[in-house]
Image (cartoon, rainbow, N blue to C red):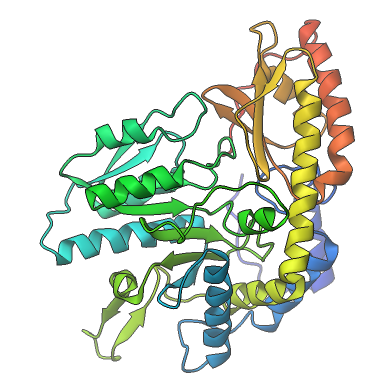
Length: 417
């Protein structure tokens, strides 16, 4: 295939638009509820708000708060609203980032640099995490010269606090818990981890990238969500993604710290060049104004009432899907999820679950998988309420086909990337 060259002359927009639509023809069909990963579809009205707000500030750059005080104010508002949902007091603070990976990177970097300021040798120091913690922690450790220690989870697929305590050494800097974990949608025993962090004088980061803008509203709806945020004294930092269940445009996430003294170690500042000093709060230099504006607009558009409504649609859909899947002979949901994610697997070797996944993919359902144990992974949005019954009908048909020997061999591409 010949390398693409920049065209000698420009092309009219409508022609370009049609080319782009054609390029996207084989993309996952998230608009009809057939995609249960990557995209969070809250409804066309919310998407339009995010799109319009993004466009209003698409050229503005949050690298220059003096030039664009509007973005500085919107980010401050988003952080204030977010921390209030997570029991942050007046001392709590934070920043917007490009996504969960950057939020986690910033939290790990802050922890490391604070330890360095106290004379700790951080080269090769350890982060102790449950097996289910996101791979963003491995990426952060890789970038920052730290070592990951992954600890097997308990029988309920949540973090095993006792095993994590046994994994702690004098080289440990950070403990991690998830609220919820990505593979199974389960909230780790954060209160136990908080106590452990206090007892061992360790930094506890709560990865609430999935649940930070979901769990508070699920709790308001009456779901018994356990403590997971700053109401627990051992929690030092929290990551929470706005472009997941905050329904903002990508990429928008938040990282929160318990106080400003702690957050100071997140910042980068330098003036050793001819253009004067520069201070940046996150890994990025340029930060797109559209992402900040889109998040600010969606949060104001939905408000507590709107978020509670969306959360109820999602949890009701999850409960319906889980009950129906458990009623299918040979299938079983995993753990006891409370929010919008869950996974299910097979109880029989005669019903290979990845083959079921492959049959569903043929019908246009794009979902993820888990491998320990093997299962199909669903991350639900409000739009899935309308697609749930069709998914179940196709699932029953797929199970029958695989059980009867007519299904395809287990796909090797059953993964997220």
